[in-house]
Length: 323
Image (cartoon, rainbow, N blue to C red; front, side, top):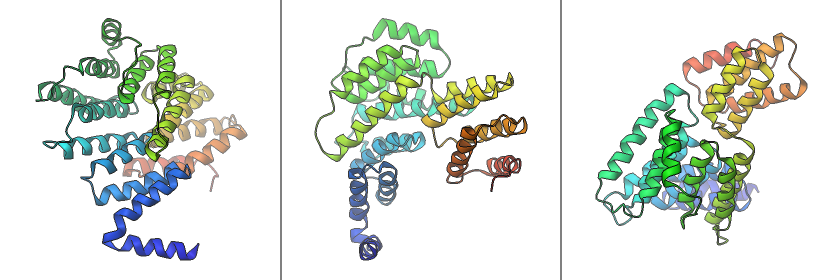
């Protein structure tokens, strides 16, 4: 094992073998179903070769599987940017940016989501004004607009568009179907969303590593959208209301669902710790919740916190005899 490690270090140190080594490591970890480590390796490769569209596609797939919504958005932006004015340019790449932007906005607070949703709005307009032939993408764009309206707290407009223009009939494209699933789910039509996910599962073909990652992502989406009925943003808003009403255990359970969907969200992690501080002071913190606290602390210590978040975290942790 030591010899293998030394060989890998040598290959990574050499510029002519560095890219291939990171790619091979990513493929190895995918085969082992260690998608977190595979994502780490492909991030290294993409940082060295940001213009490589195929590598960014792998980055995007693994970002989704690891619930990294910011990484997902950046990967789709990179693909669209570097494909521009080339034979690789297509409406699908721009639609993926729009979709990833909405996915990201649905994990953020109301204030933070506004900026991202404004970007998405501009991207839709730019795509509609572009030279691309959009004749076969009208409904896909409509679905993105439905999701955008709902994310902007305009559910009635989103519902009207959905009822007028969208059916349960599946598309040939997995990505188009996934966005339709999200539109149904986000508007509370969960049974329709799950039915469509079952149809998507049948579209996964091939035994290559890309199919493996996408297949696992579809499984993850099916599980989460069956059991979790709201977006991280909606769950966080619900938890805040529960906290104000001093319903601390339900508030914590709601945030745990949000954190499962968006495990890189520092604000959600800090909110969970804040609730557990209150519960601890009232001697309401159960053993299971103490274990959850340990897990959240371990995760947050791996995150990048800004100055304000670091100060908040340190103040909260002073409340516990934890370390």
